[in-house]
Image (cartoon, rainbow, N blue to C red):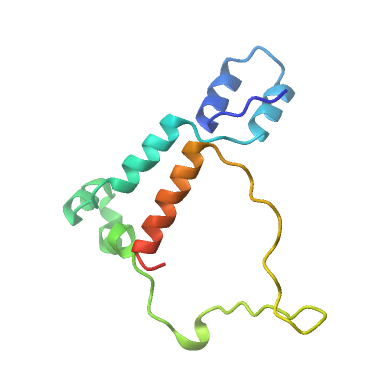
Length: 131
């Protein structure tokens, strides 16, 4: 049996485990599941107001101060302007009948309520930003 939990919890359990390394390695490889506290941290981060320029500069080493804009979350919320031929295109090949490919009919992976809430929060935030 595999118990799926947050990655931090897996690391904590692995550090405390008296089982051999191979077992804890498989436990870490099992992946992570969004727990309520993970969702709360994610939601708090998404709803937190952007840091001011002064806040960012206080956290950055002085050598990175000239590159401040690269660490500005407001800048990350915006897409760059279109650049013509430099923009990447994904052209889908038609199927054997010449029709455009159909979306996959594969079932979505089941999610817990907290995982679904986190995905919705993220998608809503990206849509609000115009992505």
